Length: 225
Ligand SMILES: C[S@@+](CC[C@H](N)C(=O)[O-])C[C@H]1O[C@@H](n2cnc3c(N)ncnc32)[C@H](O)[C@@H]1O
Image (tube, rainbow, N blue to C red; front, side, top):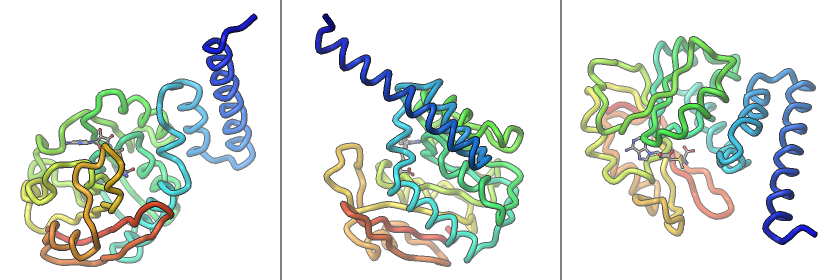
C-alpha cells in the first residue's frame, strides 16, 4: 500500500504530466512558439514556479506593459534589457507580438537558477534572446547602451532611485511596482501611483497608470531618467 508521501509525489507527477500533455496540445493547436516553450519548461524544469510566473494576473500585467509600451514608444527596439527578468515571460510575450521588431532582448536576474528556464521559454527566439545572471546594481549601463530598460520587479529591490541613478541620463525605462505589502519577498512596495512617481523621479514621463487586480494594484511608469 502507498503511504501519504508517495501518494502526494505520484499526484504531483501525474499533474506535471497532465500539464505537459495539455500545454503541448495547446501549442500544436495554436502553433504558438510561446506555448511550446511553456510545455518544454513544464517537462524539463519540474521545480520551476512557472504556473505562478504565467498566471492570469502576471500575464495581464505584462500585456498591459506591452500595449502601453507600443502606444507610447512604438515597436522598434535594438536592445532591451529586462532586469529581475525571472523566467523570461515578458520577452516571450514581446517576441510573440507582431507589432514589435526587436533585435535583442537580454533577461538579467540575480538568481542563477532561472537563466536556463528563461532560455527554454524563449528558445524560438534563439539569436535574439539571452538570459544572463547578474545583480542589476552591478551592470555597466553606459557601456551596453540598451535602448529600453525594463524593471517590473521594483518591489523586489531595496532602492529604486539608487538603481536608476546608475543609468545614463535619457535612458528609456519601463517600471512596475505594486502595493502587495503582505507578500514576504516584496521588500519595497509603494502605497500609491503618486508614491511610485516620487520614488522614481523620472525626468520625463510618457505613461503613468495603475492596474487594479483582486489582491493588489500594479503601478507602471514609462519615461526617461
Ligand atoms: C518574483 S520575480 C518577478 C516579479 C514581477 N512581478 C514580474 O514578473 O515582473 C522577481 C525577480 O527579481 C530578481 N531580483 C531581485 N533582486 C535582483 C537584483 N538585485 N538584480 C537582479 N535580479 C533581482 C529575483 O531573483 C526574481 O527572479
